[in-house]
Length: 139
Image (cartoon, rainbow, N blue to C red; front, side, top):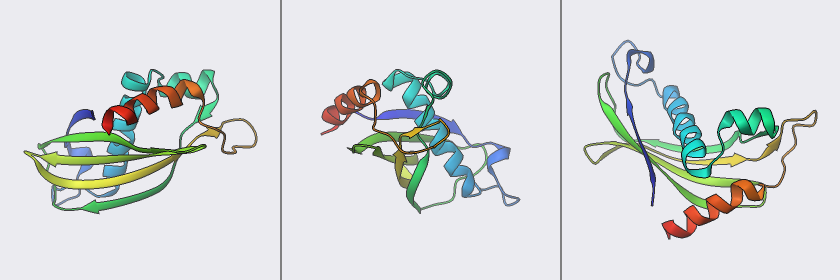
């Protein structure tokens, strides 16, 4: 079970050569994570940030860029849960076109209290339980 989302490569994503400028992939990674939270985990970023005063910033990333993507292409992004820790979790994200990988990344996100301290905090059960079910379904 993976979460899948198509993203069309637009002018805003590209450099003057018409290929994706690599930092734009990080925005796309965040987009799929945000959609996954809203649609699969059951908590939108708006609810998480405003009502629960909780954030999930990216604290570590490893990415491999296999092939250039061009304006107008529609990439298929997939997300799966790799590991859930006490205060963080790891996700694998891949983008491909017609089954050909374009970029692969592993993201580590931490749970952070959005109060004055901005300190890491435990992944709350309201997030952990849906993630665990997703992880179990994965493997």
